[in-house]
Picture 1 (cartoon, helix red, strand yellow):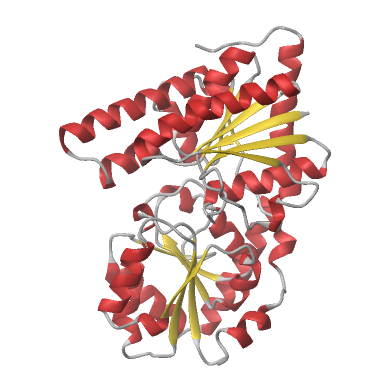
Picture 2 (cartoon, rainbow, N blue to C red; picture 1 turned 90 degrees about the vertical axis):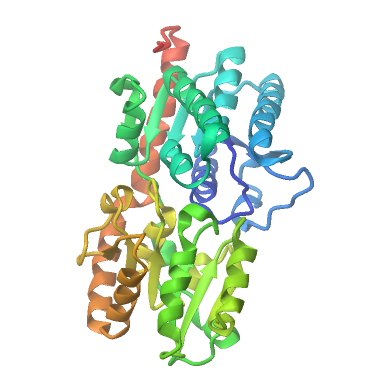
Length: 400
């Protein structure tokens, strides 16, 4: 099969969508499928990711990123030209749009209409409530939200198949009035064996030489919806009396400089470490004592799955997407993402209770086995094959 995967993500980032498409592409390539990734980014940007640059990995094509909101729309249409060029060069069998926003789906939809190639969309987040609650207000915000929602609705109605990463995301798509028959729930996946015993001493000796230090970790984008400021506020209230605590933040994003400045202002910079986007996530997870994911909203976060596979004690937000993956006091401690004090108390609970940390880690590691790539990605391949079969028989059903 020749699969074209579209994303508005930046592959240099360590976000969930970026990890998803790199992991899926690597899996498909390992089974000799021809994969082309088309992502958003600066034309001259170079990826530092070894897992997508080796000889067997997908070929990556980039489109420019101008001003953000206009850029999303512009890059979508630029992506269409990339798809058309690739399809002329060699016929594409399936277009897969990884929809963390509707614009990658829009590019996939236009490309599908022009080429006749079936479109599959994977849904990674609930964009409408995210934008309405945290970003856009007033008349301009209302106009932007309605325009954005119109694109989402169009993509969901016109896509031939939709993969929802969780039951909550399936319900979100259904709220647009989409036919439930074309929605399949297939979770994200990870290579669980990659998160076992790895070289943790490499980072211990280089960065954190004292084994007595207690390390709190986060992996993901540094964006508003990830709620990192609440994590810093909770940490600030603890570290002054427990200077052995260190907060390790892996990832990049628009709020990085704001968060760095906050740490400086509160005089906790020496205990807060901004490590940037990393490719050796499995190694870093091994040195975390606990993993914290304080997001306001999530679909099915890969970073959470990775920390589960690594056997980490987890604190995460008590929101629907996360509750589908872990249970309170079984695989994680779940907290209100709007409550700084509740998060602070959860950190202290695990700091003072190594037995609870061990229990949560064991349970999480066992649960992670359900999300191994060998189990999950076979289902996505079957979706592709069914779309191709329908197309070959000229019975493609455009559910409009």
